[in-house]
Length: 199
Image (cartoon, rainbow, N blue to C red; front, side, top):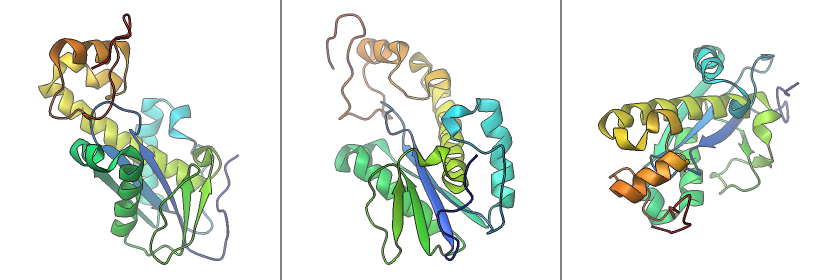
């Protein structure tokens, strides 16, 4: 059973990202603030839910949250500042866009660049422990998946509609055969699934 809050005194925002390990596409992040009495037994880590379950929960989260926001950082920016910094920047942008100002931030993972003047707590596997982080993981994942579906229409050889930019065998082989698209992260290493050659 996921917990409603880490602490009950302050307005708490949960943050999570999606797409950190991808070869292509932006990294997305979301921030979610729920009412103090909020509980939803269906919410869980987005990785533990089916695509249909995530898409069903997204409008529920958006309707029932006090505030939510989603942000992204482009592949070009990822290549400039590295994926870790890009993930934190995306979280900061999502926090900036919230219509309610948080007083405390819950972050999935073990690291975070502090957000100005607001305390935070990093929670390892927090998307499976706290509702707000789980909700943020669902929003980040579903918005990113939709974005990759749209890109796949113009770049069908990479099959982003199914792999969402992650380094599957099909995706890596497509990169080694056709090269990078404008949406690939050029600083990410692409290896041949059979020969272990690198691009």
